Structure formats: C-alpha cells, structure tokens
Length: 209
Image (tube, rainbow, N blue to C red; front, top):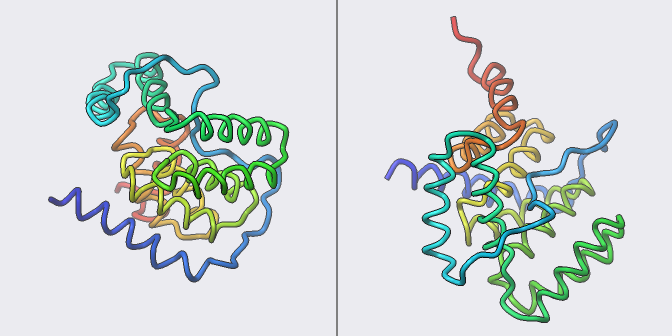
C-alpha cells in the first residue's frame, strides 16, 4: 500500500509541474547531454504474452546476481516494450529511430506524433518522444509524455530515470532523488543512477553523521 501511494505521489508531482513547464526550456548544458536509459541495439526474441512475461522479468531483474545477468533480463524487457501492435507502427518506429540516430529530431517527432495518434496505448512512442523533447531542453513536453508513459507502465525505469534527470536540471533535487530511487527500485542495475542517488542523498538529506 505504501509503495502504491509513493507511485501516486510521484505521478501527482509530475501532473502538477507539467502545466507550469508547458513553455519551459532549461538553459543548455555545456558538453554532451546525457541520455536516459534506452534499449540496446540488438534485442532478443520474446513471446507474445506481454503482461505475464513482464511480471516475471521484473522479478528476475530485481533478483539478478550481477550486472551481466541483469543486462540480459533488461534487454528482454525492452524487447517486450518495443513489440509493435501493427506493421505500420513498426515502420514508423523504425524510421523515427533512424531519424534520431541521424540527429533529425524534428522528423523523428513527426513520425512519433503519427504513432501516438494511431496507437495512443503504445508506451514506447510516448517514451521515445519524451527523450527527444528532453534532449531539446523542452522539459514541459517531455514531462507530459513521461506522465503518459508512467500511467501506462509505472515500472518503466527509463522514463523514471529521465524524470530524475529533468528534475535535477530544474533544481528539484528532492523530486529527482525520488524518481531515481524509484528507477533503482525497479532496476537496481541501472548504470550511473546509484552514483546520482548517492550525490543527491548527501545534498537533500545530509551526510551520515
């Protein structure tokens, strides 16, 4: 019950912030902007039973004894998330990825807009569009899309980590810490996130005495 209420509180924070950030853009960072966790280039084949498969895999992800084992499980989760509901959506998603790789973000956004109009229940279209908006420092739109991802899949560690990055950029360190902790609760083997949690914990809650 406590865990469910904490998820609700995090989503509520996103809902509250979205209207205030609708036009907000952060100052560009110096250097390369870090990306939220994303799917590996090569994905394994997975079965069609998404719900049962995901429940099992998230349990396996938490129980993974090491990072190598966790990466195999994580890849299977991404593979299920990226399963497309139609050939049309598959083509649009493939083209959006190619456009992103070519840094043609406006083209990718138009393709993802089309996917969302066709299949608003397809989580990865929202997640990919949120990533592009994040990379463009358009945090209002990115948060709105992250909200849609988490409403449909609250265990989406990529979206949770992305939420933490946005909150950190906006100086909302407590909310950033909450998001990163929830991402790690789902996937304890996320790269770099444990270090972010450690740094933010020291800032937000103070060092252990």
